[in-house]
Image (cartoon, rainbow, N blue to C red):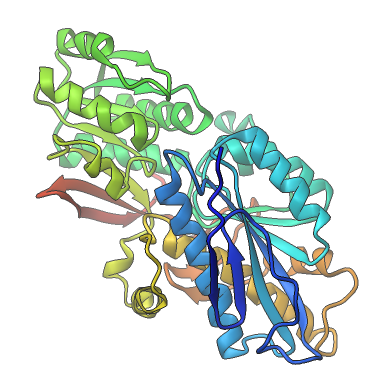
Length: 404
């Protein structure tokens, strides 16, 4: 696959979307400055590139801001973005590249939970911190047996600023049942770790509330013809479809659904993208949940939005921009603490020290207070439900997750 190689140079930071770096002396850093690299892994090409480019740009902005403000005296931050093409095998290769670059002290990303599963072990073996702004698969932080209450953190190097599918699925079910007043749903997932996990969590809470699953099915995420499953949905009498998957398949599924029966499609944060509406002429009334509160509604995000616009990025920050900035800033804050404790210099065992510091970070970020619990999960469990109205996503309800 052809990878974009346009070079973006702004101030102290030089990036290429294919991940190459300019290792020449930084013009703003001075001779005594040390260079610290933060890796960024995301789909920069392909169907999910809208979300991936928003991740890359937001990490870029965090590094630029830290350099401009001299957040860590004596340290110049660079970003190394690599394109995982939303493929686990490519993500694993990228993990090796980050590990081999000795200046990399942390990695932001990836977008997909399935890609993260291929990256966690090598990054953990290397002691290299990873913070995803988008992964929601619960097992990534709590282990495969979390459903039975046997929660065990698989990898000490893995953190995230996005909350889990356990929380997101439950929130979606409660919104659809209590707020949208829909009691009968057809359940579809794309068989990927993210989609299947989200659908399972939704089903558990929806049925506990008294909702009925009118039928269920699986689709291939690469499919674009959904007439067979749409026929099943129509016969089931369902009043909505819940889709565990992402917008490249979710958009045509929604459009074909409405060609046959006028019921909404609901999904998770993998659906919450402007591209879902661009790809779907009949998106009106569709619903999606996403992590956090809309950054446009947060006082804490005003500067991020202004700076992002001023930076002139041609791609929107999308659903994960704020969380990406916070994930990147968590690494920057960890570097700051490590350098301060080492007489203003980065120690030889920087990766180990940064990992230790990340687990203790606590600051007010773009999305609100940022910190991590004992599993590496964000302590911010805010979720938002959105509905398509007039060609755009409109927030309907935001609330923090509370155990019943």
